Amino acid sequence: MITVDAKPFAYSFPEDKVALIVIDMQRDFIEPGGFGETLGNNVALLQAILPGVAGLLKVFRDNGWPVIHTREGHKPDLSDCPPAKRLRGNPSLRIGDDGPMGRILIHGSPGHDIVAECAAIEGEYVVDKPGKGAFYATELGEILKKHGITHLIFAGVTTEVCVQTTMREANDRGYENLLIEDATESYFPEFKAAAMEMIRAQGAIVGWTAPLASLEDAVAKTESRIAESAG
Ligand code: C5J
Image (tube, rainbow, N blue to C red; front, side, top):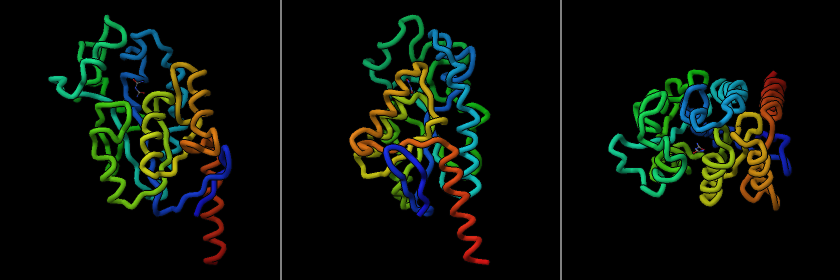
């Protein structure tokens, strides 16, 4: 087991049963000129976590642990987008409309793609999801079962929407969840802070949170213990 200094108390995970889920690091949410910025959001807030997400990906890639990326989006005919979702939000720019980076949140549009800094590499999963939660109407549950995963580490955007929704879905399915604080962000800093409080309230009711450095330290300590006992 690897034990991470986390809130509200230490989070332990077995190395062979952990996976990383990186939620919706898509160009339309993160890059200047995309959907998010066109709606008036400050995308610089989201760009600030790119080093954190990249650092987290490195930990998983260096250890050969499974990585799953998600993308929020819909089929070009919008048959998987309920009108209730499409019709909410800003009427001047809706899902499926032509936006600055192609049709908004439509599979195959440039804006639907993951930003280059966090792009999936060979052997990693990319799960396309029509909802906010990554378990709804996707193959995520089967992927996790196939790998025997019990513990999930989370990153991505936005903290209080797709990240929190997916963590709650995972929690109800029995997974033990850790959210990396400097690898997740919201357009509204007060919503990120509140979401993290909600996640770890009442004795980790949804899961734990920790900075990336705590995970890196825990992994490094475990590696040096293994090296010492081998040598
Ligand atoms: C995500 C959203 N990814 N805020 N989507 O959080 O609509």
